[in-house]
View 1: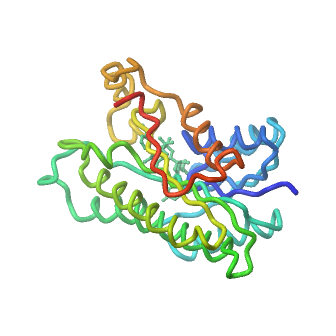
View 2: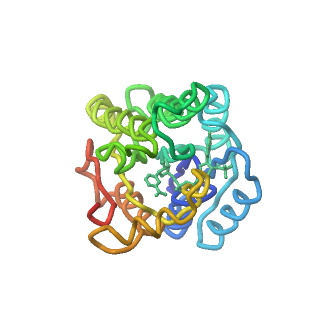
Length: 248
Ligand code: NAP
């Protein structure tokens, strides 16, 4: 039976690379996006070109009604749900905490924490064996920032990813007996558009050069770990926080 996954923020960056790799493994992929429909449609085409099936699903992970509708759409389209890649996340422009306004703090925590929790909750409701589900896998996308703290750049973002790590530890214990494995991937400096959205398009290249491996990582390199965690090859792995950070 072909499995189905919802990838939040699946239209660009790490989400898109994961969608493409899962397509090549024959998965059916829900490509969630917030605004950029053209990028989502391009990703759907890439997944299908790679051998999978895909559907673009609009929705803001910070909006409960959107999240429920996203999961409903995936299940209506493909008849099942076997995995969640809890990937959608944002940064705001680099700043000291003293200069951050309330609206910025709220949005970072709404998307990165509340959004991740709402999506994990929906996945738990639908995949847990004690609720009629068939079991499954959740991969939360955290960040090396959770252990680095990101001073003078975005301590808000770093803290939001700390929450994702802690959710991963708790949920792995909660859902393990219910047939669902839960892990987190903590990327380091990865070459995607998220750095430009924070006002520093050269950030990954510049800081990546200072890491032990001497370069930024690619979204494809992160996707490899995400897809491995989703596979039966990782069948005894749950509650793990896995760094894909070039040694940073
Ligand atoms: P990206 O290139 O900026 O892509 C972000 C994706 O998330 C897009 O598909 C975007 O959709 C979607 N998105 C944004 N806000 C959303 C919302 N409220 N609801 C639903 N979708 C939303 O980011 P990325 O670098 O691939 O990052 C992916 C994840 O990895 C994030 O959680 C990020 O924190 C984490 N991470 C990244 C790095 C890095 O260096 N790149 C390092 C550590 C951790 P639209 O196109 O519609 O906006």
